[in-house]
Amino acid sequence: MVHVDDEIPSQSNENIYIKSDSIWIYNQQKNYKNNKQIMSNPEIRKLWESFKNDSKYKRYFLSNEEEWIERLEKIKKYIDEHNKIPSTHDKNKDIESDLFLINIYIYRFIFFYLIQLIH
Image 1 (cartoon, rainbow, N blue to C red):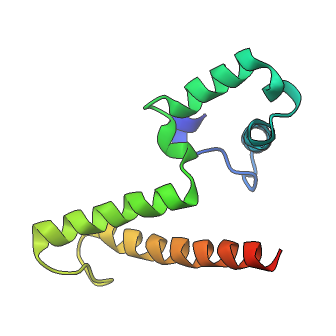
Image 2: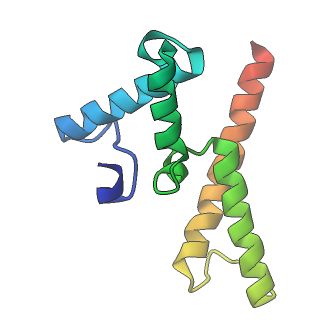
Image 3: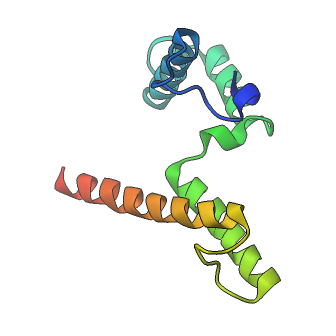
């Protein structure tokens, strides 16, 4: 399902099959991180790692920080090519959405960082 819509299945999707796939992916990630349930099996862990690191799917499993860095690199490339900082009024819609998403990732990163400090 990942390659069809160019995104990981969403838990909020109305299609029960897509929603189910999303929950499954979430559980696999959680179990992998904690080395629990089926992910405690070395063969299964290797299969999961192979899937996550496959060049075709890797971008769907980036951490928030990795996504932020990827977006930042796009912005740098834009500045290098156009000799200006992207604007929300820019005709390049990819850059406009990138700026918006970078701001979201910054706030998200700060939020999670603060949560960790509190706990």
